[in-house]
Image 1 (cartoon, rainbow, N blue to C red):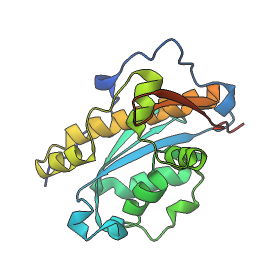
Image 2: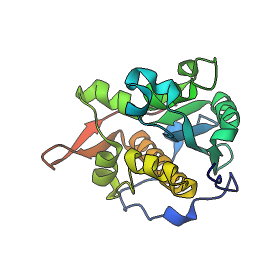
Image 3: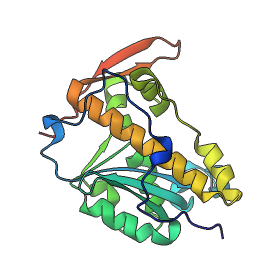
Image 4: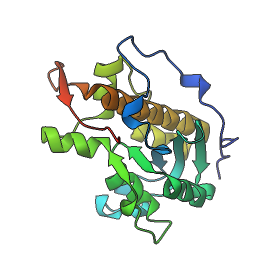
Length: 212
């Protein structure tokens, strides 16, 4: 099997960038939550590989990544440590992700009998979809709000897994977690986020992600 990235708690210095001047740091709006865990994972198999989207629990996790505000660090989990990942999610006061309730939790349901949907969660994509009545991509929000773009996509991550390039998957997954964290913090502080619509126009949407 491909070699797992190590060590698990290595800091993702290789994808840091400076946010624009309009970005404000995490403040009182979400300071009451002791441990927010930002979370993302990539899979071993595609929907086509497992017979469709009704079998997400059969896709298998290649790499999972979290950032915990409780310890101020990233954790990288290969499949062999999936139970440790699930335990970290259970310890969180709030799990924040982007489409993690409908997708990432379902992947993890292939490894546990627990219903992870019962965890205290904020799914940014689901919340925005409820307001706008259509789905946004994380890349659209990151580009409009910070001028940042995703470094890869899920299809590339699947190719990397087949090539045994787990470190590349870990870097990409860490970047997604960082972007998710930045989007959540920006929205909590400013009451809105920006996104680009299908015509390339920059728009804003009001949200309430304060946990105070």
